[in-house]
Length: 85
Image 1 (cartoon, rainbow, N blue to C red):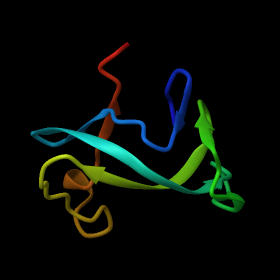
Image 2: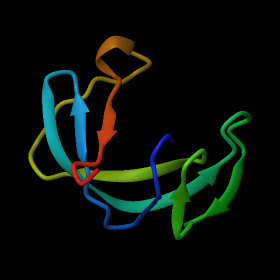
Image 3: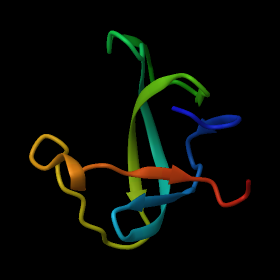
Image 4: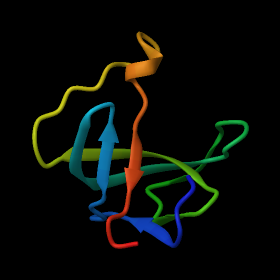
Protein backbone atom coordinates (compact mmCIF):
# COMPACT_ATOMS: atom_id res chain seq x y z
CA UNK A 1 0.00 0.00 0.00
CA UNK A 2 1.28 3.41 -0.93
CA UNK A 3 -0.90 5.81 1.05
CA UNK A 4 -0.10 8.70 3.36
CA UNK A 5 -1.36 8.09 6.89
CA UNK A 6 -3.18 4.95 7.91
CA UNK A 7 -6.30 3.11 6.78
CA UNK A 8 -8.81 1.75 9.27
CA UNK A 9 -12.25 0.19 9.19
CA UNK A 10 -14.87 2.64 7.89
CA UNK A 11 -12.45 4.58 5.64
CA UNK A 12 -14.29 5.60 2.42
CA UNK A 13 -12.02 6.58 -0.52
CA UNK A 14 -12.77 6.55 -4.27
CA UNK A 15 -11.92 3.33 -6.11
CA UNK A 16 -10.89 3.72 -9.77
CA UNK A 17 -11.35 0.59 -11.85
CA UNK A 18 -10.94 1.06 -15.63
CA UNK A 19 -13.65 3.71 -16.38
CA UNK A 20 -15.50 3.51 -13.04
CA UNK A 21 -14.91 5.97 -10.18
CA UNK A 22 -16.97 4.80 -7.19
CA UNK A 23 -16.72 5.49 -3.45
CA UNK A 24 -15.99 2.29 -1.53
CA UNK A 25 -15.95 1.65 2.20
CA UNK A 26 -13.27 -0.44 3.90
CA UNK A 27 -15.81 -2.64 5.66
CA UNK A 28 -13.35 -5.02 7.34
CA UNK A 29 -9.57 -5.32 7.65
CA UNK A 30 -9.20 -9.10 7.65
CA UNK A 31 -5.44 -9.79 7.62
CA UNK A 32 -2.17 -7.84 7.74
CA UNK A 33 0.37 -9.60 5.49
CA UNK A 34 4.08 -9.45 4.69
CA UNK A 35 4.45 -7.63 1.35
CA UNK A 36 7.18 -9.87 0.00
CA UNK A 37 6.30 -13.35 1.22
CA UNK A 38 2.51 -13.03 1.58
CA UNK A 39 2.66 -14.60 5.07
CA UNK A 40 -0.03 -13.63 7.54
CA UNK A 41 1.28 -11.29 10.25
CA UNK A 42 -1.91 -10.36 12.14
CA UNK A 43 -5.62 -11.20 12.07
CA UNK A 44 -8.17 -8.35 12.23
CA UNK A 45 -5.65 -5.47 12.44
CA UNK A 46 -6.93 -2.11 13.69
CA UNK A 47 -5.21 -0.23 10.83
CA UNK A 48 -2.79 -0.52 7.88
CA UNK A 49 0.05 1.97 7.41
CA UNK A 50 2.05 3.06 4.37
CA UNK A 51 4.24 0.20 3.14
CA UNK A 52 2.05 -2.57 4.65
CA UNK A 53 -0.11 -5.08 2.79
CA UNK A 54 -3.44 -6.52 3.80
CA UNK A 55 -6.53 -8.44 2.84
CA UNK A 56 -9.61 -6.21 3.15
CA UNK A 57 -13.34 -6.34 2.44
CA UNK A 58 -14.42 -3.36 0.30
CA UNK A 59 -18.09 -2.44 -0.15
CA UNK A 60 -18.90 -0.13 -3.12
CA UNK A 61 -21.54 2.59 -2.71
CA UNK A 62 -23.01 1.65 -6.13
CA UNK A 63 -22.95 -1.64 -8.07
CA UNK A 64 -19.75 -2.18 -10.06
CA UNK A 65 -18.18 -4.95 -12.11
CA UNK A 66 -14.50 -5.91 -11.70
CA UNK A 67 -12.87 -8.77 -13.57
CA UNK A 68 -10.75 -11.30 -11.74
CA UNK A 69 -7.05 -10.41 -12.05
CA UNK A 70 -6.22 -14.09 -12.73
CA UNK A 71 -8.78 -14.27 -15.55
CA UNK A 72 -8.03 -10.95 -17.27
CA UNK A 73 -5.26 -8.85 -15.66
CA UNK A 74 -5.82 -5.56 -17.58
CA UNK A 75 -9.39 -5.28 -16.24
CA UNK A 76 -8.60 -6.68 -12.78
CA UNK A 77 -6.55 -3.70 -11.66
CA UNK A 78 -7.80 -0.85 -9.50
CA UNK A 79 -6.49 2.22 -7.67
CA UNK A 80 -7.64 3.70 -4.35
CA UNK A 81 -7.66 7.50 -4.22
CA UNK A 82 -8.29 9.72 -1.24
CA UNK A 83 -10.17 12.81 -2.40
CA UNK A 84 -9.23 14.76 0.76
CA UNK A 85 -5.52 14.96 -0.14
